[in-house]
Image (tube, rainbow, N blue to C red):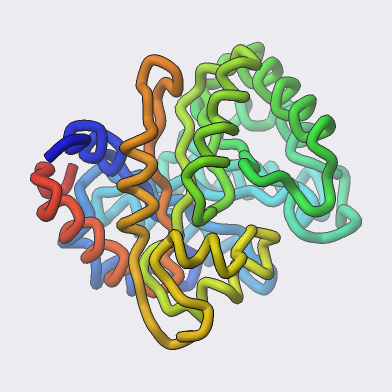
Length: 289
């Protein structure tokens, strides 16, 4: 099948995101997830630091690589950040994290954005070697593109100066063309880090549209039709098969560099892992990557 090698290369080493409440669901799906898979653990309101640490520890115990999110604006103090990082190192042996500004319009403490948290130097002090940062192929509703690009370059510079490896993980989308056009812009900016393109796991149209509206992701009728869904059939389900196939068809390793996929399991962890397994089987890929 034309494109199979590129298709398998994209879906290989996939990552999947969970919340602090999803440890049991991850355990149920664990047999379908390859050992060593990167599993970011989100930083949502209403969760305790103890729960986040416990979930990261469970991810590690299941044989995966936990990547705890740190939401800069949700931190109340430097001490809160220090204690969280110390607990992750002590109880999880953690050396990965993902730093994001977070949703609050105003910071709850000393960190107004991800850049200020990186600048604090606390990540290196607590043994963090690899840091994930956000990417927005379709822009951000509250931040201008010029500001986003400058912040990305500044994060790159600070992370490299601090001895960190880093990767960019993007907001999810439904359209391959703007994703890869954005990847080209990243490479043109001199940034050669691994990029994980966010794609939604299988879910209903209603659920996908709800997350898209919440996250500012383009989901017009024409975009969704191209993705394989009809906005008039809200209860119908689909996986991102067409999106991944188009990404693979358009993907040029020499131009786009190291690009992988990051799955948002909107329809459930097990359903997402089963979709990956079935997609790999249909395309003749090694099951599990």
